[in-house]
Length: 98
Image (cartoon, rainbow, N blue to C red; front, side, top):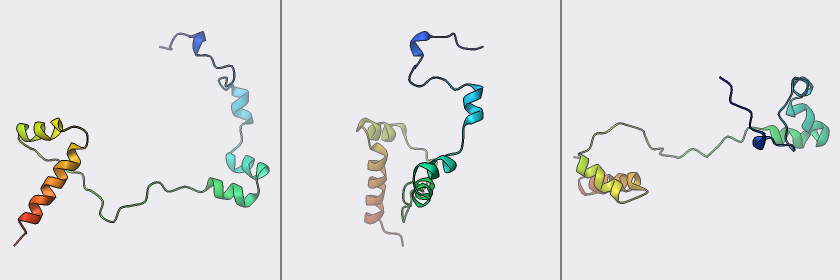
């Protein structure tokens, strides 16, 4: 079922595209090279790659803790997972593997 039309949500500066608008649309690779130099357009269209990879990324896992342990860490506020990770690393430093 379609949502009812709400005239308050109409943006006159940015109207919804029509079939004609879609048929006239061109890829950015074509348009940018007309506005900017080919080299600059090519640079603008390169994938950015996102955030740099960590040397030692964290690993997602499922762990079961006693409710009281989990509640205590969560009660400490934002960042409780990092604090729990730090507490486990501290335990490892104090109890080296044989």
